[in-house]
Every structure is written in C-alpha cells, then in structure tokens.
Image 1 (cartoon, one colour):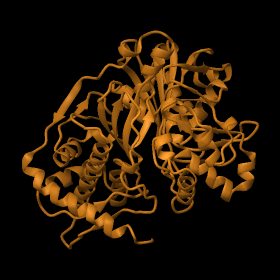
Image 2: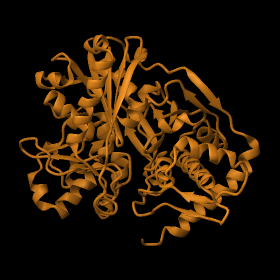
Image 3: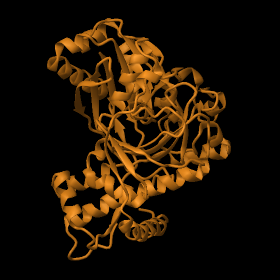
Image 4: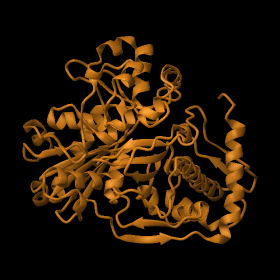
Length: 484
C-alpha cells in the first residue's frame, strides 16, 4: 500500500492505493484561510499538520490492515506559498499563499532589476510566486525578515513534520521564482534580485526520489511504521499530471479545483513569459510543462452557492434548465488573475442583470465565465507554441457534466473525463511514492486512468459562446483601469 497526501487550500486529502494503482480509501479534512486585508491570503501551517493527522487517523480507523501495510508516502500541495521559519525551524508568521496579491510592487521591482527574469524562471514576476512574498516581508515586516533561516512550501512544511528534513521537489520549486528551470537548480541570480539567502532554500529532489524517512515521533502521530520512505512528491499541478499519466510530450489536461490549470507536458524547456504561461520543471526527470494558471478555477461556483445559500448541484441544475434564455455576464476574478492578465487587482462582478434575472441565470453566467477563462488559457498556451487537442479533466469541478459540456462547447474541443478524476494530486504522489521506494518503474506507475466519458462540442452552441466570449473579454478591458 502507498499513501498520497495533498495539502490543498480548502482541504487536506489523503488516499491509499494498492500495488496495482487502484484506490483503496480516501479521506479529507477541511481547511480555512484568512484574508485579513485586501489582496491578502494566509493560513496557519500548524493547521496543515493537524488536518493531515486527522485525515490519516480516519483512514487508519477505516481499514487498519491496509494502513499498516503502507510502504511509502508521497506529498503534494498548493504551490507558491511562503512558509518562513527561524533558526529553530519555528514558524515566524502565517504562511502567505498562492492567491495572495500583496506583492505586485515587488514584482515590478524584480522585473526592473532583471528584465530577463521570465526566461530564467519560466514565468514573469507575479505576486502569487514565492520570491516576491519574501521581498515584501523584507520591506514591510523587517523584524520577521531578519529572523528568516528557512523558506518552505506548504507541503514541505508537512514533510518537515514527518521527516525532520528541509526538502522539496523540482515541480514545486519551479513555482518559487528561484529555480533555474532549464538547469533544474536554485539560481543565485534569482535569489540576489529577490533578497533571498540561498542557504534558506531546501534541498531539491526529483519527485520520484526519496526525500527522507518517517521519524518515530511522526510515525506515532500517524499510526505508521518509523522509517517509511517519504518521496519528494510534487506541487499540485504536476502531481495531478502524474495522477492521469501525463508525463509524455503533448499530454494535456484541465484541472478544475479551487484554482484552474491547463497543463501540457513537454520534453524540453519552452519559456514564453509574454503569454503569461508558466514554463515549469515537471515532477519527473527530463520533463517540463507549459501551464496556463487561473487563480479562480471552479471556486466561483462554491462562492456563488454560499451567497445564494443553496447547494451547488441544485444551482447547476437550474442553470442548465435555463437553456438559451438570456443570462448575465460574470467576471470570475474574485482573487485577481494570473493567465492571461497577471493582474492581482482586478475583481469579479456581474453585468447585464435584469429584473427577470434569477439565481439560475446567475449560476449560468458563472459556469460560462469558467469556460471562457479556459478559452483565454487555450489561447495563451497556443501563443507559447503548444496546441491542445484532447485534454483530460480532473478536479472537483470535473464532476459536473454540465460544466464540462459547457467548456467543450466554448473551447470547441472534446474533453475526456477520467474515472476517479476528482482524486487528482493525492493519487499522483501516491504513484510517485511507489517509484521512490523502488517497487515499480516510472512508466508502470504513470498509467492513464480509464475514460469515464468524452464530452464532444456542440457546433450549434459555437456562435453563442463566440459572441459571449467577445463581450466577456471586452468587460475585462473596460474594468481593468478602475481602482477599487
């Protein structure tokens, strides 16, 4: 048995798989985030470890025999977060997360100091990345900055609790803006322009390599055997790729979680910062990725459901029943946006509301907006020199037939949904754990799941979506200059 743990934004998910790759059981524990100021998004790292222990405790209770047979652990997690530790490896302040937009001014400084930054680290300077956050701390919290001795990513803080080691993987390191993507090593130049001491950064491994062993203390907390290998694992985007076997050049998938990604695997490093895509190291050796990354993914549906005080599935049914009747427009930028705008300050909103507009019509607008954000992503990927042909869909948002059909219609592309698509990154790093402990080869672990359904685009919907997409894009341009 192999254990995969994904430290997400809204939950920690743990999954146990068997030697044949089949899922035995999974559990999740919710997380909350704090937004104390506009553009701020933070979490307490202790909550990740507490949720990990709780989810694992439930798995142990569900199937004690399988739990005791766990041979290796893989870790995945939300990318880009800044976990700052002092000399005693104690957390200095709440972690600054991937969807935090406070460091836009620092990004402009980085671009001015090093205009070629995007060619080196695979992405233009963005406030979501880790390095600008550290520069922000230096300029705004100097006492905290002076205490920094280690900087970890979210899942790697859980690794520290498990193994006592400060380590990360290439794919998660790729999202920090400190990694020389082509050479797959930390860059002294990138550290210099972001006020980062290279000694603060953890050791970097390929995702298939062991990164440490479970300590007796951690084994006691989790109910596992000391000495179990903990694989380097992967940031959530690359872990999702491993979960659907996307490790060969041209393999592509759509991830619909709290955030959204359109991911294409590559056998070479292909930076194109002008298109605001991410050219990152993959979690497997000699592979990279081209990623269009959207901060808002499927999360606007959850947001609107909370506002409407209704179940998402009920609202989706009402939206689908609307048919071709008039729906308003929605901009999904609740936390700003990366691809294609790199704009932390833009915000979401409805436009075109009428007295007849009901919650079903508003949910239809939300679903359309998610689809149109992926149209922007497709065009950004194309500008970076890659074509999307038959993407797979994973993540919680992929459970909805209506959502995937709308996306297929808007994109004009067939979309295939894999069986167990909602498992995502946790499954991917459980597979990496299989490789790390030497039980299987990478090729045997990275198998593609069975296809649950293929969604074909309806040509009759093309004109409607083309017209609405044009209005959607015009609304962004019109609202971009407005300072809220």
